[in-house]
Length: 388
Ligand code: KIV
Ligand code: ZN
Image (cartoon, rainbow, N blue to C red; front, side):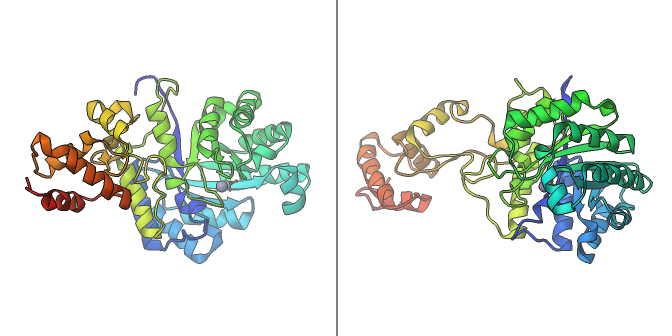
């Protein structure tokens, strides 16, 4: 750990993640995810949006009662009735937080909120003050921050902090920013808001252009010390920044990213599997870190390299994310080394002279089938003239 700076992980699987079509969860399922997130070591669990429905209120309240360790937050619009519901839902948490938001881009102000900039600034002042009377830990999000006028955004942030916000979140709500733009926004707020030292700066990136994790890293480089993310990157539209990708990037590239998270990375695979089994949505095989192919190798050249030294083709160990071992998958791209090794693992030690013909048969079978199972291999050996 040493002198690395700590990045807080704010998990919103149960709020922004659950908002995505196909990911709704019931109370019992949400409680199971919440205790998984606790085991994973996240710093903050956003348990839901208390005012959204009686079911959401109940879920936030139950999670607040059960969780021991992470802060438990509820989302709220910058409205008294939302803040009352959020405050009520999290009040039994050991460490409660109210997370309120108001849009700051002209587009949202004009078409969605029908407010002037001045009116919105006043609403921030009033509603953050109101929230602070309900709870000591207040996060304010400037929705659509990345498309907001930067001078105005700084004014809003300064007002929110002066009114009692302890965390300031700058969402890229529609996943529009490029990494250098995101970094610039965060750096500008970090260096030019006079009372910024009184709050933690946070980023919340959506993945519409596929930059959510890259933008989260850019945000950290600009001065953010909280990152909002979800398991497997689930969330509105193309999703949010993926927790496992951000955390493993920080862990794997410690040479250029001098930060730590409190995540026990060995719990990552188990957490992704739980989410998938609860929602019934399977993880894309090529998904970084948690896809079934993330630690699998089929090509002969790669398998040969892996057998000599795993570092040739793996930048992190499967054990570091809670997997037992790398899968050397046999298929038409595999080489003789991996073929013989797997046969040995299956108990066959074949005389040298038999291998070329068997390997040829294996390639013919592999051309026909997408993957070769142990049963296929056994059949191949057993059906060949002399057996082993
Ligand atoms: O994407 C967003 O702007 C949000 C806020 C409510 C934090 O989810
Ligand atoms: Zn969001």
